[in-house]
Image (cartoon, rainbow, N blue to C red):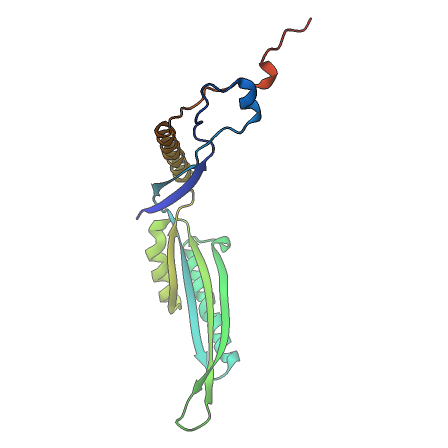
Length: 202
C-alpha cells in the first residue's frame, strides 16, 4: 500500500526584471523586482508499521461487576499481545469509559438495566506483517471491538526531501519562464560588498 506526500513552497525572488541600463549605485538603493512562484510535488512511500485500536467492552448490572470483568479480559488481551513480542512501550491505554444503560418503557420513566465499561488500548505494530496475527490474537483472547487500523511509515524523510526538491525545481522553472516572458533575465551573482574596490592592506 502506498501513500503520498505533497509539499508546497514559494520562491522569493525568482528573477530580476528590467535591470539593464541601471547604474550600480541606483540598484544598490532600490528594490530588485522579483517574481513569486509556488509549486506542489508528490512523493510515494510504503508504510512499514501500523497502529490498532483494540477495545474490550463488558456489561453487568453494576459498574463494579462490569469493571472487574473488563479488567480480567483486558489483562488477558495484553498478555497475549506481549506473548507475540510486543513491549509495554507499544501498548498504551487510550480510553476508558463507564456508562449506564437504560430500558425505555412506553409512557414510563427510564429503567436502569446495568452498566457498560469500555477499555481501549492502542497497539503500535512495528512489523506490518504481524498486523493480521495481532488482530486474531486480540479477538481470540477477549477483545470484542476493533475501532481503527492505521498504517504509517517509520521514516518519511527521504520521501519528504524528494517532494521538497521537486517542488523547488518546479517553482524555479515557472519563475524563469515568467521572467523571460516579462522581458527580464536572471542577474549574475553579485560579489559581497566588502570585496568591491578593496585594496590589499600593507
